[in-house]
Length: 249
Image (tube, rainbow, N blue to C red):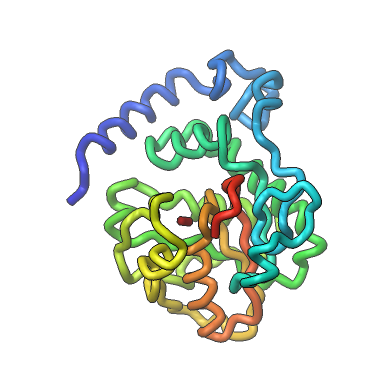
C-alpha cells in the first residue's frame, strides 16, 4: 500500500524547492548564481567527509589505501569499488533528504558529483561496456516515488563515457531494509535470489551504481546474479561508503 504522508511531504518539498531554489543545504544561504553544484556554499562544502583513501576492492575507508583484511580473507564478487564520500555527518544527511524525503533540489548537485566520479575513472575503467543502476522492487519504488540509483547511474555513465542500461536487472523479491543489527549471514539471506537478469550481459564488463554502500549484501547479491548470467566483471560506484568495515546496500 502506498503511504500518503511521504507523498504529501514530497509534494510540499517540491513546492518549497521551486520557491526557494539554490540554497546551501547546510546553512541555507543563497548560492551564487554561477554555482553549478547547487548543494553547498564554499564554507559548508569543506564539511563534507571526502573519501580520500580506501580499500580498492570494497571502498571502505583505509588510511593506507591498501586491501582491507576482509577483502583479503573473503574477496567480494565485484572487482573494484569507487565512492566520493564517507557516509556520515553532512553527506549522510544530504543523501537521506534526497532519497527518503524527495528533496529534488539537491539532485542536480549530486548528479554533478557522480559525473565527476565517472570522469575520474574514465581511463582506468575504459573497458566498461555497461553501467547499471541497482533495481528497486516496484512496491518500494511506488512508495518512494523514484529510484535514486537511476539518475546517478546516468550521470556516472556520462562521465565515464559508457552506455547506461536501465532495464538489465529486475528486483523480483520485495525485501526488508537491511538494518545494522543484522549479521552478515542474515543480510545475505535476506537478499538471496532477489534479482533476475533480463538482458544479455554475457562477456560484458559492468558497473553497478547506487547511492550508498553499507554492508554490501545487496550489491554482492546483484553482482552474483550478473556473474552467473555471464558478465565478465562487475565494479561498483556509489556516492558514499560507510566508514565502518562492514560488508545493506
